Length: 212
Figure 1 (cartoon, rainbow, N blue to C red):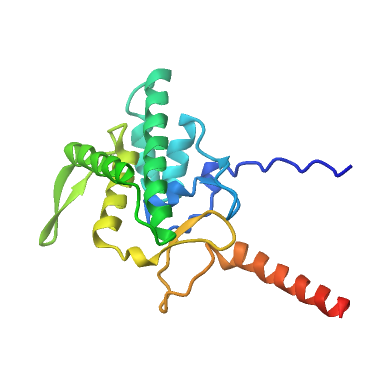
Figure 2 (cartoon, rainbow, N blue to C red):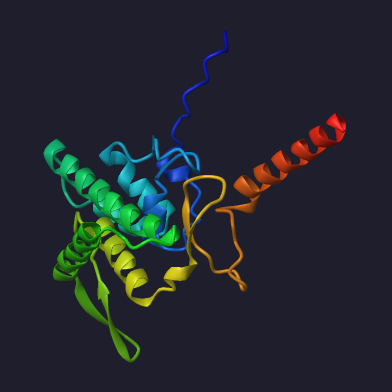
């Protein structure tokens, strides 16, 4: 009888590897799993995970996190709504960008939902002048600031690309924007999946030599 394999434990949201190159891809990577086995390890399961993840991923600053905390008492209903909305955005973004990484056309409904998410975000944004142009800005006093900034990041990636550089790691389910010079990046991180793949290849070659 083979021993039961331990169920993988979720990495705390504030300790996740931030390798996506875009906030929307990093949000997708907050739920992960094996390369060919779906996504089954969720690091965003409670509302209290949102702000630590957002600071860790660079979506908001530590100062903005403090401002959010000073924004008044939260309620369990409001917290649940915030989490549900962010998880829903993650599902939409993952459906779109995982399809693009696989060289397929994204589901039109997921695209429409992402577009609506950005439209809602734009409606809550301020326009702030930066040198000779204006940019959207979301105040940290808004409970929706995290999902609004992520929705905007997703929309910018879809509009500006390069979508051909959106890839899935060859060793896990993480999505990333390949910013390497020749576009040949295969791993979310050479220190993690890349090293593990090299080790597996080394073991397989040794085993093959021994068998020969």
